Amino acid sequence: MIKWLPMERIKADCRHMRWDRPCALHKAKGVHCATCPYYDQVRGRILIVKLDALGDVLRTTCILSGIKEKYPRARVTWITMPEAFPLLQNIPSIDRVVAYGPDALAVLTTERFDAVFGLDSSPKSAALASLAKAVERKGFGLDPSGRVFPYNAEANDWFLMGLFDDLKRKNKRTYQDILMEICGLKGLPQEIVVRLTDDEKAFARKFSEKHGLPMGSARTASGIRVIGINTGSGRRWAMKQWPIRQCVEFIRGLLKNRKYRVLLFGGEGEAERNKKIKDAVGEGIIDTGTHNTLREFMALVDLCDLLVVSDSLGLHVALGLGKKVVTLFGPSSAAEIDVYGRGVKIVPDVECTCCYLRECGRGPSCMESISPEMALKAVSELFGREE
Image (cartoon, rainbow, N blue to C red; front, side, top):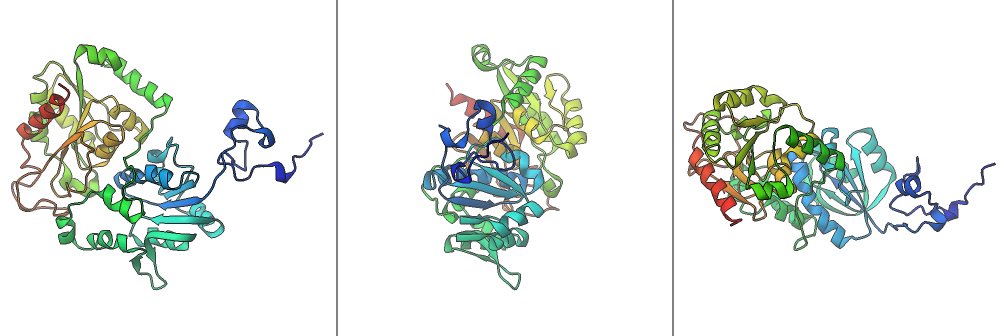
């Protein structure tokens, strides 16, 4: 016969409580609430609303360390698009990730939060931030007439930059600095967060063994350096791509150094592009494939010592993993990117950079103006810092 545990003995404010199933510690240790030594009391509830795009979702994780310092006992919930879920997995400072849609609506109409950070100025994101029941709101909301507005003065500049390209071009502050100020976290620690699971690390090790890439102390002893190439871009921002010709010449230049190993990265839409690069380069380049899951892609990036990358998701993944980066900028803002002292930004000397145009009739374009020699020099500079 089951002996029911009185409700007052269930520690409902414990961070580990899952309600519809036993908590992980009960499964692992067999503990019950009344005598559990792992009780972690929640004091405060924070909601983050950041839906898309993928790169922006990932770089928004920079606010998490500041949140944990300012609200050390708070439970953190993050609402995002389903496709962004993999980016937020395995991050200890996020207690719950909720999908945009019915699940998010259920949370917003029933739960209460101490603070809501609405960090998208899109109407659908701003609507979620406004719908949430909260004591404090920062970022962007939606008024009854359907107009997006900044909740706090610190969000004004970012709001206007989203409306006017000329203001975006004049900006000299990093995205992270701007977001930390909007959230009332200015001056607190911030860095992009990526945390791989043991299974994902094992996946990368298997790939490394298959292709003869040394890891850990063996790589250090050998002097081998693994360089990733991720210079494509999504369909939305085709102008961010580094042209194939320059990319091929750059890789050939890298392979002249016998200590360099080169990995080629790309997404599903870049299979044809990467085939052209690999066929033109010939021997010496390792294609990681274009059909990896997001988490597999992240694990393979972790094999690199340095990633040469356009302004894309791969850049933020590499920074979150603590990698060196050489970043190629053209139509987007180099000023917004914080490389944490581990990177070189290459910005061509043309008047029209940071134009945020989807198409360009100029020749050569900004990305065509980035020479292989510029990128080779940047790689040499970054590895030279180790000496």
